[in-house]
Structure formats: structure tokens, C-alpha cells
Length: 440
Image 1 (cartoon, one colour):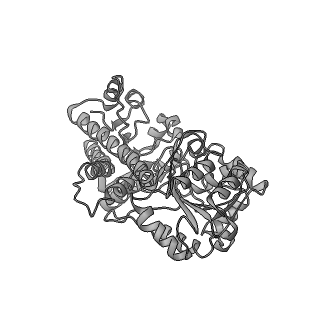
Image 2 (cartoon, helix red, strand yellow):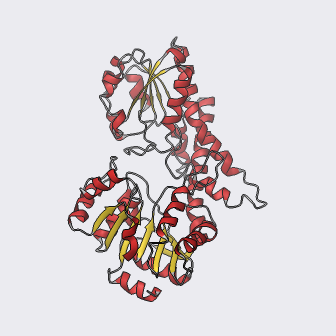
Image 3 (cartoon, one colour):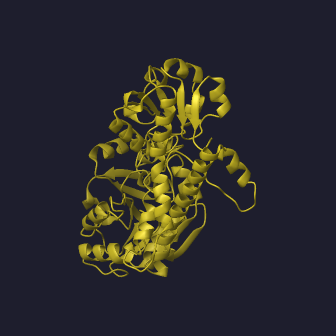
């Protein structure tokens, strides 16, 4: 199939699609294209997840508006089905790849999942298929890693035997469908014609700007935007630490700073988690690892944000000492384990860092999270006889907590609020001893 024929097939919605990796990105992507009228095959390694999806039940347990209903709809319409079998990809015209691309302990990209997909896909891929990497990758990865590996595994030349592009996802849990539909996408192709063909595909599901470009630009844009967010959050966190030191209120400071034109101070908090922000800045920095480029700001921002859960631990230790308790002998209730409010996504969770540290000190830890099965339960009962409570995630339901009932359950009415779920007046009126992050 030529690129022109592929584009015509896409515009008529006759192209057969596949999505490899049915997680937080791949599943909603597959559902969106199926809803648009395409025949979509999803490939997922976990057979239990495949069975759940084919039964019309979403494996994503967080609050994802519209996803459960959409999945049921496209499964019932037979426009979408999932499989574990790569051999079923042989008739697919477009293959989208949505797998994790983490970094290791030295901040070097770990492309094990991506490598495995490319090796398994190559022998099954039809001639003239278009492969699109939606995963976030370090600048230069398409040219240095993806294209050579896919050429080798398929035995075909790029732009002849297959077409290749990079269209990084721009979604976050809790807004998956809304983000897919409403946020601009950068569409990077190995050739301008490939980029335009990719844009023709995404126009069926994206109701925002699509900017065709080359692969290196697409890779740079995605890693840069998340590095930008990480740096800005680190700045907000450092201002929060300053406010604690001088007796200020970072929340009031932020409100007034942002009244000035062209200012947008981000939210401080108990840490930065998720699959993207903790590692995408390192992907950006890694792209020039062999070059003579002195990277200073990105590592500094990462250090600030990585330190925030341990700062929460320091506040906890100091506060407990003031009420006559030793952290190592205390029982702590941690509210929230997901990295993001109203989500079940616990990847790189700041709460995990805090909990591990508390265990190392000898403290007893009770974790509550309404969206993660192993941590669900009655919050008030779980708080019984705890010496302190730490709010690590701003789940909406936490803002509705009966503070008096929670206080009655606690052995000591001491709270650290790492997300400013509660206002100082609320905690004071309820009789808590408290520390809100960024509040001196």
C-alpha cells in the first residue's frame, strides 16, 4: 500500500487500526478510534486485562468520565476487541504503540517494553503499514532506536516497506478522553508526507490543532513541556519552603503573584509523581548526554521535587515531637496513595516514598485511598488510635471528610496537609494541631 492509498483508506475510515498497550493511554485511544468508526484491535500482554476489556469492563479504576460507557459501546458494536496475539496484526494498516518508557536509577531510558514490541511487531507487520509511537521518548530515539530496530525485525526499509512517525500523547488520568479530544497534538513523521497522513488519521478523534512536523521536533516538544512543568513545580515548592521558614503563606503568595500579567506560579505540594513528569525531564537531558551541554536546571528541579515527601516526613517528626510523640513509635495514617487526585494511578507515587521512609524509622503506617483496592476502607475506622494523619493526595472525597469524627478517632489530633485540602481555619476550628505545606 502506498502512502497515498493509506491516506485515502484513512479518510474513508476503511483503514484497520491496532493499538499496542492498553493502559492509561492505549485503552482510551483505541476506544476513541473505534467510536469514530474504525475497526480497532488492541494488543495487551496480560490475558486477564484482555478478558476484562473484551467483557466491556475498564481495568482503570480511577474517576475517568465517559470511559466505562465508551468501552462498553465499542465492544458491543464489535468495532474494538483486545487480544494477546501479535499474529493478528498482519492485516493492520496503522499500528499505534502506547507502552511505558521509564528511566532507570541512573536516569537512563529503559526501552525494554518498546524494544519487545518492535521485535514482535516486525515479522507480523504488513508491507506499507504505518507505525506511530505515542509513548514519550528521548529526542533522537526515533532515528537512532525505533527505525533501525523495526527495519531489522521486519526486513523492510523505512518509507518503502513501512511508514513511521511519532505523535506523543498528551493526557493525564482523570481527563483521558477530554485530553485526547481537546488538546493539540504534535505530529512528527519521518517524512512530511507521513506527518500529513498521520494528521489525517488524528483528525477523526482530535478536535484541536494538529501540527505536522518532523520526529525530532515532536520528541523535543513532549519532553520539553513536561520538563517545563517539573521546573515550575519545583519553583513553587521552593517558595513554599521559604514561606514556611519566614512565616508566610505560599497559597496567598501564589494567588497574588498570579494576579500580575504573564505570571503563572504552579501549585506546591507533597511531591511529583506519575509516569511522565518524574522521568520526561531526564529523557530530554539524556538526548545530549554525549554532547558538550551542561545540564543544570533540570537536575536541580528534579532534586527539589524528589525531596518533598521527605520534607513532609520532617514536618511530621517535628510536629509529633511538639506533642510529645516519637516518630519511630507512632502510628501514622496516610491519606492517599495515587500520585494524582481522583485517580488510581500510583506510578512513582510520592506517598510510596513517604511510606517507605516511615517504615524505615519504625513507625506503623496505615494507608487509605478510595481508588486503590488494597487501600480502600472506612477512613474514620482506619484512623482509630493513630498519632497523626498526613494528607498526601487531594482526592475530592477527602475535602468532604468529617473533621470532628476524624479527630475523635485519632489518638492525637495532629495533621500534616501536604496538598492544602483543608483551610487553616477549618483545622483550627475543629481543634487540630496542624501544619499545611507552605504555611508558616
